[in-house]
Length: 283
Image (cartoon, rainbow, N blue to C red; front, side, top):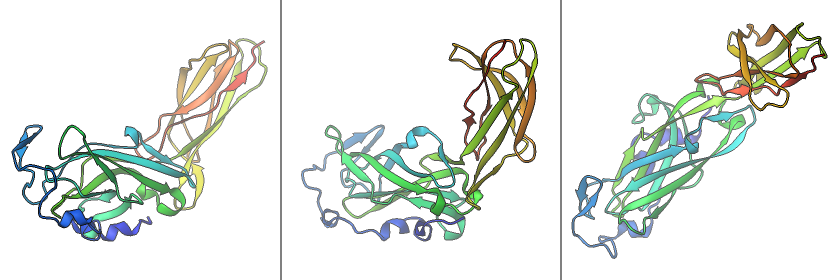
């Protein structure tokens, strides 16, 4: 799997040391902030708290939805979170990473960073509480060159306070990056006499990030569904399994005019997909 250069600097607080701090971070006093005790949730802290001290919360990647990518998909994925530090937040960064240990390069199998520094805006009602937003610009064709990238990714967040103290959290939230799936359907014969048997065929495939093509997805449970003419709701008739090459084939009796489709619920590595309904006219 190809990963961005971020992997070599993600280990621990090193990711922050590579960044230039704003001039305000070098000052010895935060302008306009008193030294009285202030409360953040259940924690009472001084504006000039001990080393680091930034707490991250409310982190959400892609609106809480899976990130599903085809072979050439380009997608901008937003991450939002809250950074709290009574000493202020001068700068923050965000990375998505895979692996077992973010403190060592060997423990990281993949990482993706936001293309620009995260933007953090301080609350107008709470000193030291910042709403932060960053964007991961993902390109399936260049960011992933192996299917091992599909699965769970962890969110790594880092921040400097206004006194140049660094804080990091390597597992604030998780998200799933999945391979996109495709599904086809064809019901025949059309038209058909009422009560007669029709054959429904199709194919389930998914993106292969190694080859840059779609390939059949074998031995997967797929639902055959029906929606009668004039309705907006599909009903599941049965569940069938795709062949080793992704081929689907089953039969059912046709009693009403309507649409037949296959629906795949997805897996931990592959997104869900439903075929467009194929209409059958019952005489």
